Length: 195
Length: 195
Image 1 (cartoon, rainbow over the protein chains, first blue to last red):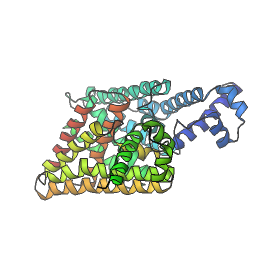
Image 2: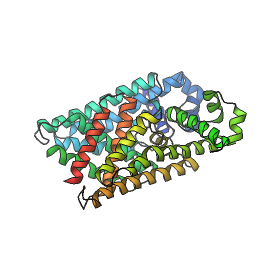
Image 3: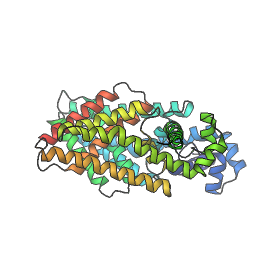
Image 4: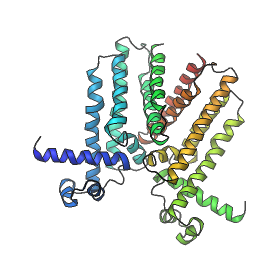
């Protein structure tokens, strides 16, 4: 990476951390400058507009998500081990990578009623993520770990339910049992998928 | 209800509809005046501050939720029929009562990182709701519909997962299969709870 690319990546890391706490809607060049101590004019030279900053931050989030969740999942052996790797990687992403938890859960609430480029970028992300879960679940079918007639779309929906319930329960309610519930939920999905 | 109470309830219905679309954070006396055509000074006489308006709107949401979800659930026969009534009532609440869907799902994302009276009121609501699901699930245990050793906290977590996945998937992705997935998910939870 060139020096300019390194700087840009560092700025976007800060922007992503900020978005995970306050959301994407309030993420502006002014807010980012105030939160990081960087100069507004310097940030403006990088992003030109609030919307461009928001889009670049979302795209940066997608890259971080690829590194944190997609890569380690694909590094695991095909089959149920890979589904488990997907779930474990998502849990690390949610609890360790960003202070405010998964930025896509929050953004999908912010933009569900709000048309525009952010909405469209987010829809693409979330469709890709759902398809990825389905593909990984299908690998467990072809490996013989899950039963042949498993509805992988239904499986992906249920797995996403666990991640959403974990995000909502652990963050708002500060419920220390949320991690155990999510983990036990995964075992229930596995039992049903094998049965 | 007195004329004043009727007026106040009508204003809070509008505020709740607005919050379901734009969220609670941007809900101000000025925004509500602009959205409804009511006078700012009239609204100010009712609520005095943005935070008071937000708290009154959240409390109004709790009352609407009680009428739409809690009452019809308790009207159903104890046992599995009551769990089904809880789920069906929540789905109606999510899809029919407010234009922007369940206002508590969105608010719990908005306030999970933001301390204050709104956060605290929301935490109370969500704890009550989770306990209510547990109590209803326990009625299915005592009626013999669910097995005696069912972990009702785990069941409540899984059921909430279905509602969150439905909200996120149907609203952002406009996924027409979300309703079927949620319904099929409930049958899976029932099968596991009886097994």
